[in-house]
Length: 266
Image 1 (tube, rainbow, N blue to C red):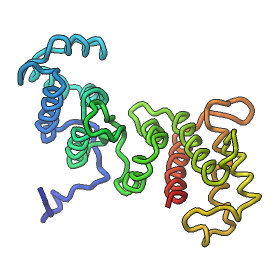
Image 2: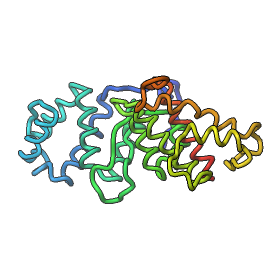
Image 3: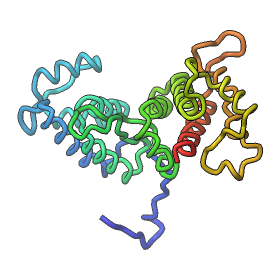
Image 4: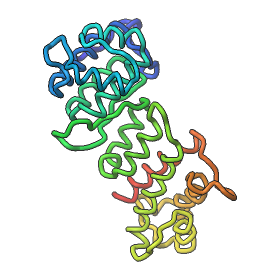
């Protein structure tokens, strides 16, 4: 449905996001849950869950749920944190790619602070989604190609923007991506790829660099030099100068890696 607001009241600020589930989104969320549950066999009728599903859900979330679908969804909207985790559970276990896309359409249009993302490009497999923190559209679009093409980068993105972020994993996976990208392109015979080693080698031999736009960067290794300290916050080695990354550092490493991947794969 297209809509061009006429008055200020309905010009919704895309930067104002909510972690709640207001009344205007509940019907769409309910319909999505029912649709996914029916296909997955979790519902034996339109209004009643299969006992085995409820039993497993009780154990997984460590609380007692009703087997009546209406009572179940009512309990979700009373407790937004529960609704968020149930959506994540459905995405991770039952949703197909088209299901993930539909939920993301609903969440994005309603101004949710959460986004449904696809974690596998399989068209038929179930459980190919997850729920993460929403980032600005322009940021997500710039990363879309690299996330679809590079599984490790998708893991890093999910770790960074998940509801329980793992910034060590974000940096570690990004380092793996950089080592793979630079190793394949510039050091194909190196048996032990390391980010810092590659940065130093490329600084000494900057003429080898061939990323998109390198002709307007001086010195050419300015881009690669930015990654010199990434290994120190990778997480596996916290002795000496090593330490756990902060959120800001992990976000920088993630988006730097997306940028580099895009330039090196033009």
